[in-house]
Length: 111
View 1 (tube, rainbow, N blue to C red):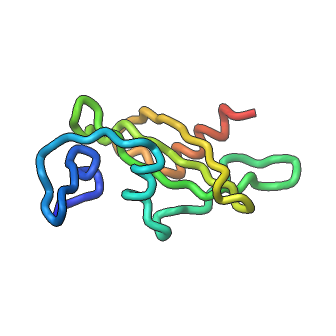
View 2 (cartoon, rainbow, N blue to C red):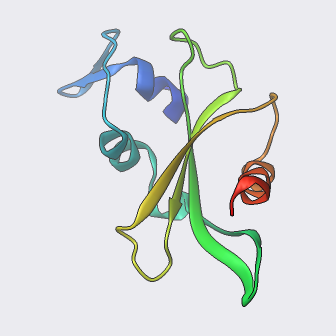
């Protein structure tokens, strides 16, 4: 079993064994494989006229040149009342940037 979910993006699951084959996957496939229910975080991206603009957020590291450089991510924003309604953001950020910081930056550029 790989040490972290990040390795999953570079490996292909075959039966019960991990192979070193690289596999491309759709966003929906990556989300289903890498984002368990407990990984969603409810965060405000900014304040609107009716208060905080709350959404559920998840983050998936993206391999850059088949390496996890800790700087490239896919953020998924899910509506609270319609969980099937999602928005996706490709983020390049300095190493160590938190999900909260990325969400605040997205909120500053939205609207």
